[in-house]
Image: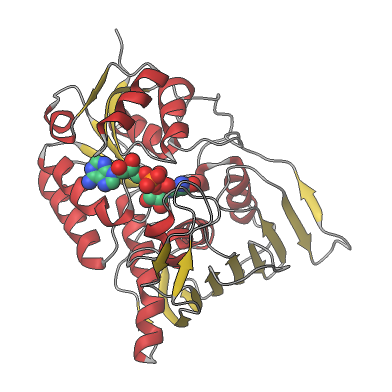
Length: 368
Ligand SMILES: NC(=O)c1ccc[n+]([C@@H]2O[C@H](COP(=O)([O-])OP(=O)(O)OC[C@H]3O[C@@H](n4cnc5c(N)ncnc54)[C@H](O)[C@@H]3O)[C@@H](O)[C@H]2O)c1
């Protein structure tokens, strides 16, 4: 009997290929049975490319009784509407990041799902990759002692040089915090724990951006969101974090994430990837030590959060890339701008549990 969990993908744009690939081929417990996009030709092309039996309208996908999990790969401002429609149709839903572009949207999704008895999951799931799972194991095993502080930096000059439709990065709901903050904050919450307080300052340096990628070369986009956001995070366990996200910086020499503990420091690989170099410097070592990865999924495993949700449904356990985690991350991200605007520290009201680490020794494609 085929007991794979049946997935329907909504949104067949730039990021979808890796989801189609992993959810049809890599993970043993998922299969993609339908896909949809506002532009039907996009869904038809992906169905043909990845052997998906049905390309259809969003409405038809949501009405398909075979679809158990809807994977929402639409643009951020559509995330909430698509997720709510999926929940209304009785589907579990896993979306690209961010969960929504406001607390109201995020809460509406969480409340509707609780009422309907369905699960909510969200990207990023990169924290389930071998790089960050190795860091989690090293921290849990005491290699750096108790976390004292963390620095995290995501600094670049935006996406209009390469993305074919980069407008959404500069609309409300875009910007470097809502776009890239989820990777950094999800990694930090996974490694250190939940956040209780945020302060920060934000600015938009350039009022417009000019697209230099094809096919929209030369189009000028109005910037509606801060593009440089710097802040301080207080973790529930007392650690103090610094996070800077920017689309205004041409070059830098700062790390992605470093965590400093009472016994040593750990250099965490790029949280927008699955593998990478993990290094530790302890109080009793002269040099930084490159550590072997303890976990698999070091290749691009986007969709692992969906496969983990599928395994969690079967195993009646919590899934790791959860809506609760994404809601906390959204709450924290929005707090930076709130703190900047109000000139005050913002207390974080949402709570979440640190997701369970992945077990050691998983075969590729399996989650339990
Ligand atoms: N492009 C990347 O490298 C990348 C990487 C990681 C995450 N993401 C995230 O993935 C999501 C999608 O990004 P993208 O780069 O693929 O965007 P995109 O614009 O290339 O693709 C989005 C697709 O969704 C469709 N769509 C929009 N609204 C819809 C709706 N209401 N119903 C059905 N279809 C709809 C669009 O027609 C388009 O084909 C975003 O949340 C983004 O943050 C993108």
